[in-house]
Length: 496
Image (cartoon, rainbow, N blue to C red; front, side, top):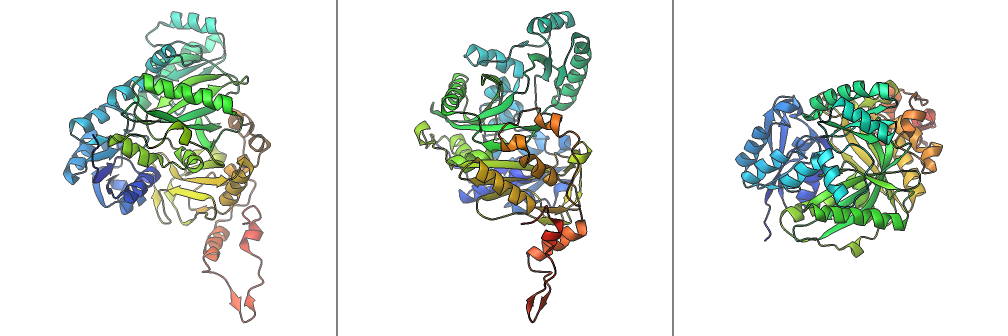
């Protein structure tokens, strides 16, 4: 039985809230934004049909406040809630609260979220279903002596990981036995602060692996498909910054094997809606299960560009009870897509956040360029939240074309008033490792750790360039445009 959705509340902020609202608008679904006091004039608030303030800037009192969000949903008459990613997106209790109130939750069943959100429980269950996992301890609660014994048996180096989260938090690499106790203590403390659980587990460290994930869609009628893989190996301190689809190293045989492994695992645990099965792939192209993200991924646009499937639309259709409109044979990837995450952060200063007011913002355009943005010129980026501003996605007939287009688009991106990683991203994409498709999960940390900008940073000139692009600062004479050299040419690295 399918349900009609007339109005949806988006329990998130920034670029992902804006992106979800675009699909809702296309589907004729009204939208409700929620916002904290510091986000009162945020882009997602301005775009929504309705908006409700849910508390002060602190996330625990606003975007993580279940009572406030449920109350806003009830008060506005919204029949569905989309959690986006981050905040409450993978919170089983929030999914349960929504369903208890009679709201459609755009995501998997709460029990599945709870199972797969616990890394140790997920490893146990999916290992039993035949997914290959990295050797390691399967659960917490063991004594230090037991952990030391298990670690010696698998061999050093190892990685200590948080059982309840990811993104590099609660993660420590341990090279020798003398480091294990301190790593367990510090990782557990960080995990407790970040995820509310201090449980950690230990995995064998894979040297220079690739991080490759498979996008899955599954409906409530027993149908499930995969939408091929994404390469997510370009990371700094376990945080993805560049993703692409398809992977430059996955052939048709591995693509089918990994894809069907993810589909079969999803069916085995009763997974519904969109989800991502993440794997590490070693030098011999053996793949190992890493985790499942029971939500929309930040990097979902590259899959959309290559497959032509609107993942948010499919999420909504599935939650409403409709069967998948596509079968596996309908998924025919075409071309290549690359995504760069644009943050308010300083790559020359350890990627420290760089909140502040955006004085100038010029976003690129042209064939094969997509910008998923949650900010605008004049907006003050708050310090309370993840500093992502936007995602820049390019599409081309092959990897080289998509990468060249991305470099061109980055060189057309102007952001002043705050620091962004745009120059760093250009250097990364023009590096030999990226050009050859040989970026591993440790490449950035080992080869670009001392990166510093080589391009001139002249804010006044960039601001002038921004005006020049829109024809607001072009000097003219009876003979035509001034012969004064273009500011783009003066900057060199930012030449269009």
